[in-house]
Amino acid sequence: MVRLSSAKIPGFRMVCAVLLVATAAWMIPVRALAQPDFEMLDGNSLVHATLIAEQDAVRAGSTVDVGILLDIEPGWHTYWNGKNDTGFPVSVSFELPNGVRADALQWPVPKRHLQPGDILDFVYEDKVLLISTIHVPEGIGEVANLYVKANVEWLVCKEACLPGSAELETYIPITRGETEPPRSKHASLFAQMRETLPRKLPKPGTERALEMELRWNDSSFLAVVPNAKIVRFFPGNKCANLVSPIQDTERRGEDLEVRLETDQLKSDFRLQGVLSWEYPDGTKRMYMVDFPWGDTKGYAHPE
Image (cartoon, rainbow, N blue to C red; front, top):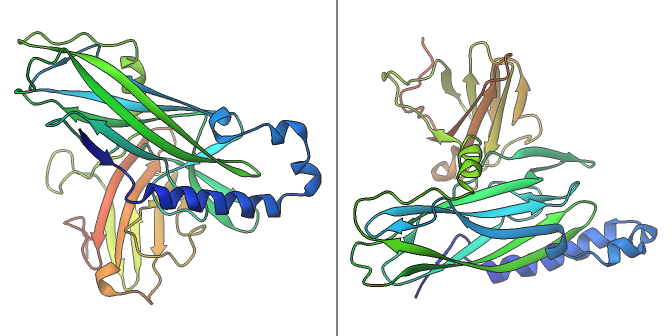
């Protein structure tokens, strides 16, 4: 049995969750904590987690996409896997048969969540699907079904934060031959959620290259997107610390300047995360970016 995890130390995350709950409880008025409906809540009642597959079967020697579907109680939220002022992202640890492997989770672009006290988090509300591609080897043997187990942990917050967890499992029939397996009843949801995933940045000079200008200006990174209505940046875990996360991650208009703190090692000085923008007609673009200091990977600002 192979275990693959999206969190290096999930036990530590749960300890952090307990500390966060304690901190949140200290911040909430006593009268609010005394309400019976709040006392009856827990993280598992606020988030319903299921493990679903895009196909009803998988061919030996091919792949199948599975997803952790989180249905979140209205008004509550879970966390993205980038930089947040509070909370921690959903943790998923897969248990798979020997020889079977899972790709890293694909994280949809989150929402900005600004709270009193200038607390900025990037969160998911209502519903989110975290997709992973499972690779099934040709020589898996005569096994009839692919067993997939996912151990999931999350922190769900509103005025307070509550940890939750679930052990999910599913069996996906394994087929042989060239016939494509049928799509499952969840296939349309996978397609819908993929529209919220950031894409790889197209290479400059190609047909798909973007019309935008990028440049480093000392310790700042400037992105200019012609005709954009609003430009946003979602800092990833490897991104250098921002001078002002609130100001430097969203700006109305065509340009966004992301200022990075200068008291960091040059080896850590990079802009990493998701750059997104929206046009006046509502069209949205979302791309993964990872630029070391001084490098725009060909998207240079014209002199």
